[in-house]
Image (tube, rainbow, N blue to C red):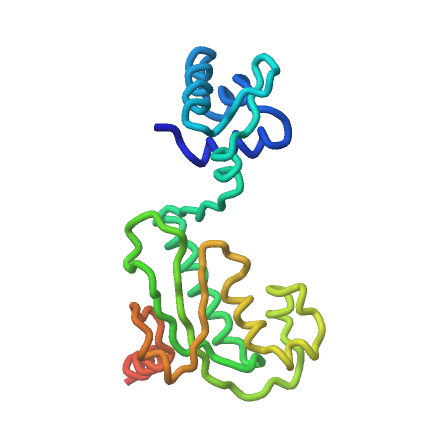
Length: 206
């Protein structure tokens, strides 16, 4: 059975030009005879059809459907864990920065955790707790979010700024916000709790 992602690449390129033995061989890394066999298999399966030009095929209806489909991207467990770890480091920065509006209060992973398998990403839910109102524009969040580069946007949309800082343009992290009191109703694994962290530090001092 052929790799449908590679087949989709062939079909999308074939939409713009033609499907040829050279194209199939390059995408699937096949030799000449193997590429020719695959072309005949694709024709029999209804993905491509002859167009009257020797060595060239066009897309049949089934091929057009597959070419237009969107496949969910898959990430390794190591990649997903790395993005989650980086997010937790950003949480520490946010909570240490005195001039921002909010603390990140809790974070739950609502997808598989511990992360052991490939997946479409890490789904996390976070909640906030209010800090004191800032009296100056946050340079930290400016650097993280260059599109929110006006002071009034920070004041009007502090939670959007914080969301963008947490996500940091990661395609791996799927982030959802809930109110702090609603977090106990969210199914998942609690991986960060500001209150528990404070409690642990106070116990250390004692």
